[in-house]
Image 1 (tube, rainbow over the protein chains, first blue to last red):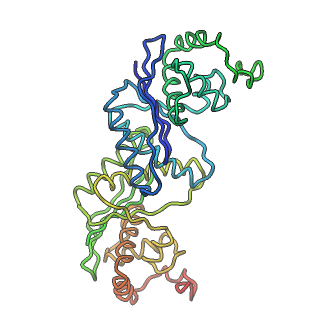
Image 2: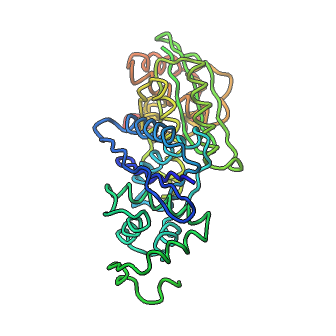
Length: 185
Length: 185
């Protein structure tokens, strides 16, 4: 199963494609679509849409997963993010996908096992789950991979258990940040 | 010159196409793309995009004008509106148009001559400027026509004068709502 995760933004839209054989996840591709505000907002939207459409056609995933958004710093940034997310969703829908949406807490829960985990904890866990030497950059790509992994785990609860078990023995400095018992919340 | 105005919304996207010979405006088409929330938000976005693309291909306007948005009741509705506006802009950009954006105050100024005019005053003026027997319905269509007329007037200041002169003698009950001198603000 191949899942394509998207983390939309008007200036940086992260994407990450993850493949799983049911027990091990593999990174297929990840990156960020960077658009300069100098292009003008409409041209930025066009670029996000075109590049995502091209990536979906290239990787032909089985599913597309996107982080759901209910929060923004203010109305202005919500409007901007909404535009970018709208064209990103459209690229997936036009390619025939039903987008799976996950809240940030769901992504954190599925990846780290704790809904209020810090961003860097999620990124560290993405690195571990995909067996990478380092955290994928840019951070938007790592965030998109986390959404894709969240979808894999949501579909297959057994996969979560497998992976949490496989990674639990490794030293993880970020675990020090989680107060004991918080994982069970 | 033919201008296509868009008033985006997630459930109702108004559109209106206006043609001018330089002195008189003519209504070409107007209406609203109504999408039921029952379809699901992604399907609503797809419908807005598909229908606007089809309308632009049908009417082949010279320009596309959209109301710029900086305000929403809250972050949640801003996100929703942003999505709809994003796919509406995309339809125009993909068809090769550079969208002209006008603030609500600019639209009111260009159509009524007063930046803080009421919604019904704008609609009444749209009716007068297009020589219609009644205000176009639904209201989203009238709003989109106002944006198109605003673009026409912004391009041709002489057209404004012509039309204001042509319509000034007609009885307009809404004028009673404007305190004397407010037009000059």
